[in-house]
Length: 469
Image 1: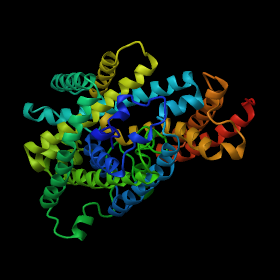
Image 2: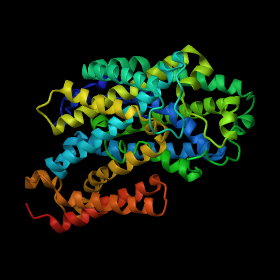
Image 3: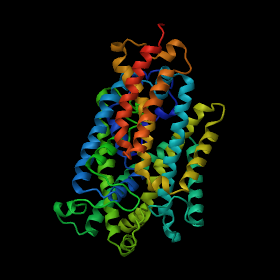
């Protein structure tokens, strides 16, 4: 699911080149660059958690297999016809594009939210790696319902992993990128191996037996919500909402020669968000048949979702290594990106120290298993908060002439804070978050309405507030 393991041939993206100017023709990349990037970056640490969590939500075979096909297709279409379309037209980073529309002060708020959410995601991946590192120490694994650290061994391991990851991330993007790209094929291979071995352990010899693993679905585990077909479709569509409809990947696709490069995201969706999620779910299906898991269930408790032991049970030491690397390749560049977001707020502080600050926040988050164990909900919240900012860019790009508003108004009017943007986001966020909480509506279900309302309100407020330049 991670957006950050970027291939060396487009490493300029995070290297800071062309931050405030359009990418020149000489630096554009072919579709092959993006194919490799997306195939590798979406088979990462998050996948080891998300696959099993679908099982805890009681999904049926049809809901999972067909729902993921449709949801991932919608994500690919969003990248192709929104993100890539606008990126190739303007060739600007998300942050500079937002600054032109919103103003510098409002973008500071976006960067703060982005940086903190990055840290929480990185913390969840430190948790994932810790479940593998803890195996040789016979560490008690966090339960699905755990929110706080479960012992001193857990705390020590998380702090050590967090410190190592933070120090490596602070060395800069070259180190992060090269290591991540080297590890990605190994992680994809591990997911394939885990899936194949798990099928053997489950005694699956035909497609009908494979289908029967999920069957007609079941009741969700204690503390989890029931996932239906539409839960799977909408959640998988918006798992990367901040990147596609939220326009974060403008920073990536501004290097694309053609808009058609947006189709390469299918490699990430169907390798990582399809194959890897299902493979990880199979690992958990094997564990659920064990006496330990059955004992939890008979006591009315949810069996632990610990990626380390699940992968170790399937492919041994290679599984431990794969989980550690998968968590690392997500957490490390995520911490690096969080540091960059913070540096935009406190530019006088060096990249090294803002990365260490981000890493410290991520490590503290990693101590609390809730971020990983509630990853389905956290990812939904992440997209819900950030995606509407992308609607501002999309609606302005496609409709500014029809509505008769000035494009990039903050830049044109020399505004530091565009109240049209803030009001549009605050109203759409507040209204639909209230609906989600008050009426117990799954947050991903209100992400699209919030996105559409935010874009529409932005046009209305801009029409009302803008003065002729």
